[in-house]
Each structure stands twice: as structure tokens, then as C-alpha cells.
Image (cartoon, rainbow, N blue to C red; front, side, top):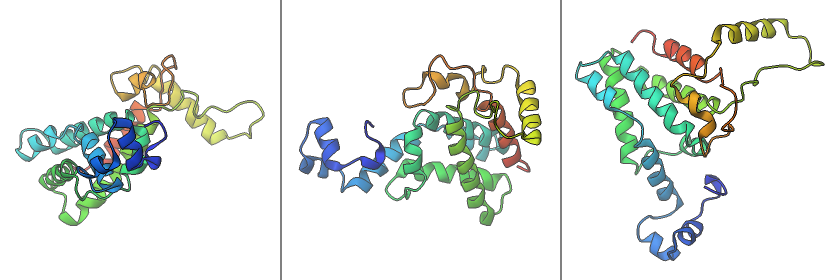
Length: 212
């Protein structure tokens, strides 16, 4: 979107696709319905097949949840401007979105998560995934300080230790590796590898999926 999803209007969309606003209203009731269609189109790109496989007992639940989370992040790393919209958009009128949540809930239930704990797990995972989608486009020098900054011994030691351990992190096959080439994205195509994308994401998944 040229001007951001928050500025989306029915008249603007109609003008962009070359129809009258009244013609557009023949297909959707208004902006909320249009956003639901958009939400469904993007959510439909998230791979839920591993979740169904877990329910059938074909793959471990934790493995399926990890595959789903990776796919979710990769999709929204390509559509980061949509995250603030979808994060607060009701799922009513969005069947593909509803089906995705049902697949996640079924997989978690298969993994032994009580019904009362499923939604907190889902929300925690989504919060982490959305933030991680933004991290894909973070600059490699995100946490570097410059001369003149206050001395931060604990943070400096932790940051240096992470960078040393990460080495070539960011050059792998995850979403972070292709961050620079993204049209919606935020990182330049010639940006150095981002060590804060893939390795922290995988570590976070380990913590979120522990016990499954």
C-alpha cells in the first residue's frame, strides 16, 4: 500500500482498481470487510499442513508448531506494514484466518495443552512471531554503541558474546537471510547479514514450545 493500511479507504481502493465506489460495495460492505479479505489473503499464505499432520500423529507437535511459526514469520516479514492492522483485527468474516487458528488449537490440544491454556499459548506465539518479523529487517548494527555513549558493561559483554557466537548468523536459509531483497521490507538489498533475525528466533521458539 502506497500510503499505509491505516489510510486505506473504499474510495481509494475503487479508484486504484478503476471502478466506482458503489461497484466495490457490491462485493464488500466497507473498510472492515475489505481488511478481513486482505487478512485472509495473507493468512492463507501461512503453511498449516504440518499442524494437520501433527493432529494425525504423523509428526511431533513441537516440530509442527515450529514449522508453522517459521512460515508465519516468513509471510509477515514480507508484509510488515500489515502487522499493526492484523494484530488488532477481529477474525470474524475471515475463514482462512479462522481455519489457521483452529489448526493451531487442534495441534496444541494434541500436544497435551489444556483448553484453558491454548489461547495464551497462541497469543504468546503470535506476539513473538510479529516482533520477529520486524527483526528480520533490523540493521546488523542494531545494538552497537558509539564512542561517547554511556558505559554499559553488562549489555556490552552480552552483545559482544552474542556476536562472537553468532559468527555468520543471518547468512542461512531463514527469513533473515533474504531480508534485504524484500519490497515491503526495510533493509537494503546490500545490507550486511542480520545476526538478530534467525538465531534469536529459533532460541525463542525453543522456549515457547518447551514441554510440547
